[in-house]
Image (cartoon, rainbow, N blue to C red; front, side):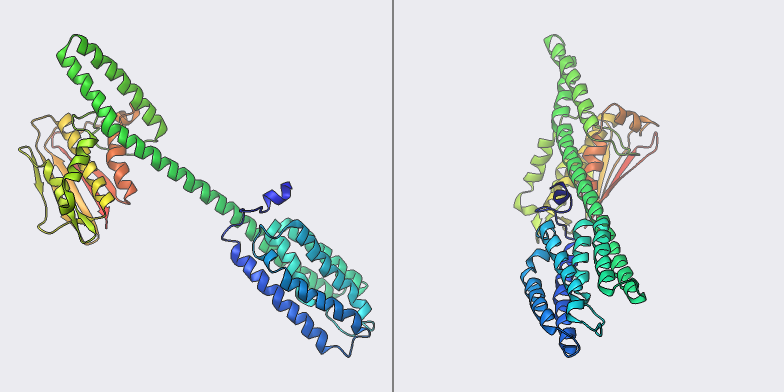
Length: 406
């Protein structure tokens, strides 16, 4: 039973194997017809044709009746493989009884005998293919009464072919298992990153706000702010341990701004149906609410269309970048948002005139668990197949360039 589970129980078949099973089914039908044609052609040569006729009739019925068994790994059971191999051996060993003079070269099943061996190869891999090939080879030696050049040639041909196919099947199975595991890990990582972004854009920012306001009010509020600060640190540690920071990620960290992700979602929702054009969402209404006395938005005159989810993700990333400007560049800093509609991508640039990012600040922020940029900005763009590049010169401000392929 363990062998059966390893080699393809119900549901264990893979898409890579299916073409091989279909080819095997076709091979069995064609070679059964070929064996019957060879027998009919040499009917006058056989000393006892009555021995071969029932066998070939049984072979034809078995081949047609077991097509379902060679349709996939789950249906090709070990019991069927054993019966299939036994039928091939019986045909080889019955050949001397039918061809009493040894005038006919091929055995009664002829090249059909390679079918059971190939079934072993596809089902069980190269080791089982080698075992089945040796059994068929031994039967051919017994039928011929010894080794001959033709016998050795046929045995080697079947053995090499079956072992090669069995090895390919084993490699394909390992590759598919590896791919499935990689896809599972990637899906889990994406979900963790999504949850971490939501936490960063809402809970962590609220905790940071409570900490700042509590410290400013003093008294009991200060104690509440201190507790909020401790919870913020603990939650950041939990988030950073669950989601790996992207190597080389760099941008100003958004440790906590008063505007939460819910506010950003409200901006996106505020665009209403007017933001939807021709099956896409116009990005301009999602960025327009950021315009103010210290934020300038420059956009093209025509709609800049993206799928709804992509447009919201870009708007959230821009909001996170502006949060960073307000926190790290100061309330007096100016920011500029430039929206560009290129032929193959949408480009959004957020630039400020703040002090820039000190050397090593980005790596330190990630080490502290402050992953606002790597999750809220880079993570969102990465999920869209885009990129987020940061250029910062101390004393000359910071520029974040968001690029989303159409």
